[in-house]
Length: 189
Image (cartoon, rainbow, N blue to C red; front, side):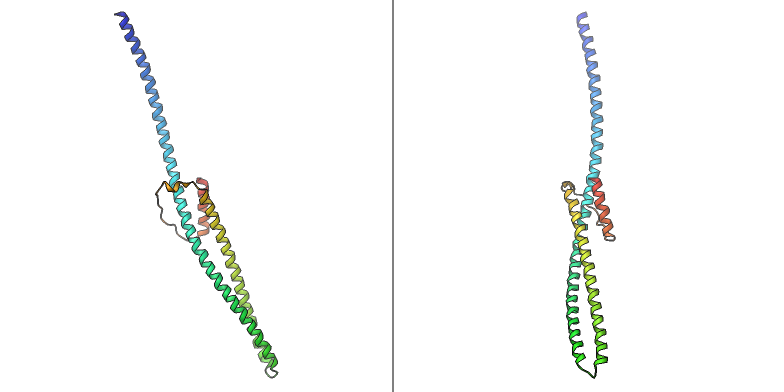
């Protein structure tokens, strides 16, 4: 009987040690679970922020494409205006030459045609300057679009997993907003 009692006491000691070890392991598992939950929350927040930024970049690309199309149309109109003004200048020069042949009206006609010529050339120079400005703007918009595309291609493809939508941003201050968004996306990733 004493042997049975000793075995029972030994079993109780082993059981107690096992119970303490299991409780410690259970506590460690719970702590690990809490850490993993916190990590999941942080990752979920980052995923949502990334998805929102990607959506804003997509909307920005749409606006930039509209702006580029509009600028291309304006450039084409300015080129046509430049062609018309060049043709008008040539016609004015011919007209001046014909008027110079008329001796009786040489003084008044020459002065009038010279003024018309100067105005036409001034308009042509203004149109050329506007054309260069529009072409410069178009190149800038193309660069900004390319930057945004590069940022979007470097971003993780996490947007497929989430379905979060964001309200469309306002369209004022687009260049500054795009720079801010691309910087934010770079920091997040």
